[in-house]
Amino acid sequence: MRRDLPPLNALRAFEAAARLLSFTRAADELAVTQAAVSHQIKALEDWLGVLLFQRLPRRLALTEAGRELLASVRDAFDRVEAAVSHTRRNDGSGPLTVTVVPSFAAKWLVPRLGRFQMAHPDIEVRIAADIRLTRFDDGVDLAIRAGRGPWPGLVCERLLDEELFPVCSPRLLAGPRPLSAPADLRHHMLLHDDFEHDWRMWLQAAGVADVDWRRGPRFSDSSMVVQAAVEGQGVALARSALAQEDLKAGRLVRPFRIDIASELAYYIVCPPSHAGRHKVRAFRDWLMQEATAS
Image 1 (cartoon, rainbow, N blue to C red):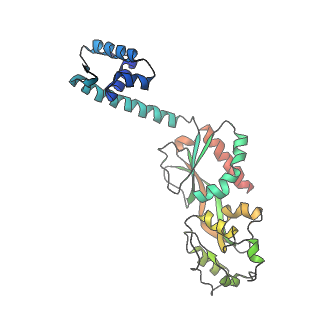
Image 2: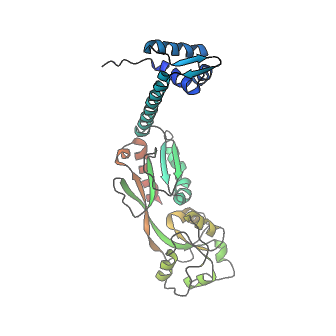
Image 3: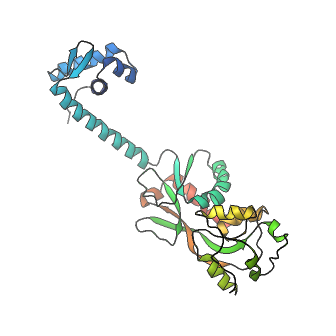
């Protein structure tokens, strides 16, 4: 059914002029001439059969009809803008936005990301490091979460399990204080993340009872614990996924071959409506390949 509506350009010109109370400023915003704005508004007034502006000396003022129309037009434009934004977010086009816990992003994902870009140069990736659980209503396509999973209403795939084990700088092993047995940890600084009981559980598994597992500095992010160990500041109880690259490069070593399983794992998470998108499937498949290779 045909809708009896005025031209959109006339409404755009009116909204800008009414908001700015100036034909000249509205013309600058719309990148047209002042005469074009004046013509569009005159045509709209003729179409409506009412005056929308009072043309006063050196200024404009809205009439009562103009104020009423402005409120309705702005509401309609806001709704159109929101609908277009929602459609763009949900059609699967545009960049691939992935939220990741900061430690995993820094120590596992970012060092590997170049391989995905080489394999998929057509997909632009945006990584957002965030400890919060995204609600996927803000343009996020995919998340990598650390937790126990699954999360109701979401597609969850287990990406990586974690083991915990002590790591330190090679310089520490070559230092004056021995580190040949777990009991030698009493002579070294213990480095902690927010999971404060992990050291206690590892020491129990290693059969060590006389090391104070509470002592030593704490870091809010697990990647900082690993970095502190790289810098020779003590012995960290590292998460396997986060320490892997530093171990390969020789920046860290494992003084003992004793590890324990972490209660947490890494998961690929997205809403069911996102799972079929080409860019999401491509990134998911690549993540799984990288996890298998590591």
